[in-house]
Image 1 (cartoon, rainbow, N blue to C red):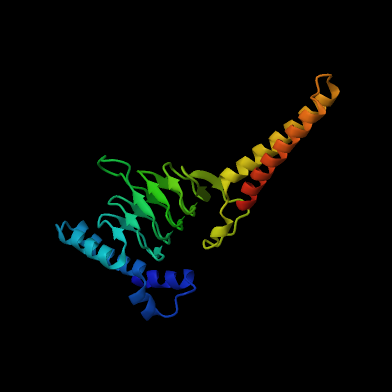
Image 2: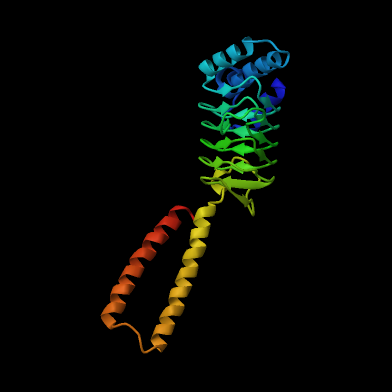
Length: 241
């Protein structure tokens, strides 16, 4: 399993130069090594020691993984500072987790209370996945998202709360974070275009009606409309939509 973890790092991280550097300078890998030992002791019922190993790992790596969490093979925790993985969390094979990610619970309920991640899942920096929810295979969770509901396979999640969208025409390279869709901005763009079309129809009806506004009123209305249009365009351009 250690060899699989090492191979995954070399495949996904262009900064990885040699196995010695990866083994001693990658906190994500070190945290997984500590966790696999702690998890084995936890499964056979050894008290205290698994939690103490987890505590030492957090002190050395900045990554907190409860000994009860189930971590698959080929998982890559990149940078990793601030990552928290709860007791009943399950992380599938070849998942990619960035710094600041939380796989946590939503209360004090007993039993399964942390998320389950499928295989080849990418969780962006600062994302929070909370509760006993299912994240399907090959899901991409955008940075800073807060996911509170089940997510089907082959989808992308962005926003607060996380909104699911299909990965239409997106690159299959998991490192292409710039190609994650901004669903909220796309919806705003669609509504903006619809409003402009309605305004155009309304202007045409005004011209045909005897209740058309004065010329001065038209100029004031046009000025306000152009200003608000410019603000909306700036917002959408900033999102790349």
